[in-house]
Length: 572
Image 1: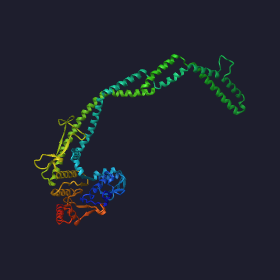
Image 2: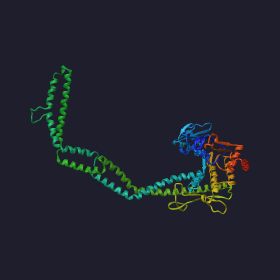
Image 3: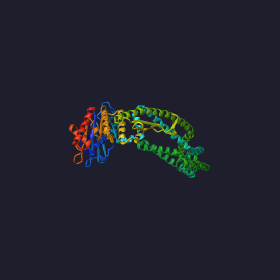
Image 4: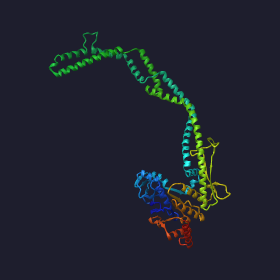
């Protein structure tokens, strides 16, 4: 990795061994920035406070070797990234304003993609992870992860059944608790539908009746106007000598028609007058028919107004016009059918709830069985690790229990509480020595014992997680003496099958590393390119002496450091 302007680090390059790399240095020298840098490369949260004071941005660049065909490679290639001699090139930039950019294999990518790759590339185990594992919920999740498909398969089926059961229970509760409200709604719908059915409206009827009422209300004036217009066009039978428009137009047409052969223009006008005469005749005929058809009966007007009043009652309640009223009736009829079928639906849901409860109980029992089997293997593996960590008499066990709940599901003859993850409560127990009762690890272990237990748990997890790199951030805190030597030896053995990076203050751990990196500040408080050194030979002895006694030139410390290195080489 190359780290620039991150925290106390100005510009530094960190080269990690394929095996076991120990990162050491004085408190505050910037060792944690190595962990933070790796976290940024793996999609961690970008905190602008990490940017070195005076710098515009912090940049972390990393080169990670990955085997061909690995899931991380396939996902990176899907995003358009290219490998560089079998390695992924990753960079992350964090600006002082808080903006963050990520690049993968030469392509700009969303930061979330780096997080997706992280699970396949690096497993980070730190003190925060230890504290999280003290919580039973995290311990249950950890056990499930350790168990693998044996738990994952029934858990997926259980989760699907659980979600459907909760949905059924919620719907049943709504149907039963809102029964009175639904009955009231149904009564209101029936009343409205009956009221509309009694009137029997037709679509658009209100518009038709409004037009008819307007016509009937002005029947006398309409009839008089039609008669006057008809007389003007076709003449008045009571006045044979009267002149009308039809007669005048006919005379004009005859005058032009007599001479039309002498001028085409006059002939065209004669044709148009002929058309006018025909049109006047048609209009006159329609006016005569209109006057004959006009209904001036006041009884009909009263009937129309009465019908309009009935329709207005409907539009006042159910829609702005009759078409809207009919649409309301159609929707309400469908809703009423739905409400009337609730009883049948309740019976169906009740039967489905019973079936899902039985299915869930069977899956919960399968989960419990799988977890119990995995718990025995897990506890045995952690106990074996503790023997390697100078706790030969300690015993780890896992308590899997259920809580009675009258509203739960029946599993193994008991009605127990259930959650989205099953019916099991999982807790890691420790008996530190023979005769001691098993107690939760948070209560049953001293500080040093707790660190070793958690390290043993992490190592067991590491053996079951198919990732190529493990980062341990000061998980050896609280450990010293012979136990520290055993911690270093165990991490060295783990490094035979994977890359291991450890940030540590313990010389006993650092001595077992294949490569030891020293992070140190310059006199101005920054870590420059030369501030991250690979220690070899005399330099490594000097650093181990400092870690042992705080004195680099102490002969006693130097002798002890050389002894540690020799013991580590002999163990390897």
